[in-house]
Image 1 (cartoon, helix red, strand yellow):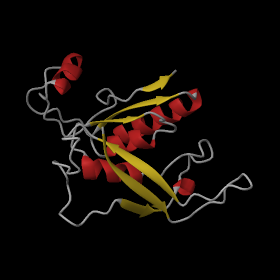
Image 2 (cartoon, rainbow, N blue to C red):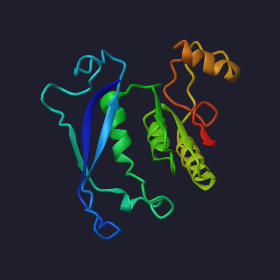
Image 3 (cartoon, rainbow, N blue to C red):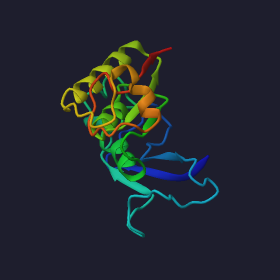
Length: 178
């Protein structure tokens, strides 16, 4: 269910490419949660009372090196902000319009998992490469309770893993070519 609305206020507003259309200086972000959906309170909030605004300001994605391939690319700080505010290690994030994989890269950095869907095969390849590159920077540390790679998904679902890092094989990143 819808928990709250956030606004991403872009510091740089690009002119719209079509005449007669207003330039968009912001985007709405819908926060879904099954955590007491009837209440506006986030029980697992990672901020102090009165310290977090519902407006996030920052540069747009024109600085992103993948913005030529996908004009709807957003900057890496955006999903990382949501993950640090609303997430915890081993959470799974879903990006229904995966594009070039910014959410997947953010999940790898934040030691979380993600599922992404994308129609464009070229963008799927870019996304998978970004996540693999990020994961290759991480060290493998399974900790206690991990049997082997064949039982990894089962262990994740049962919360049996005390891993602080992931490798490519562990990341539940799926760039689907639909």
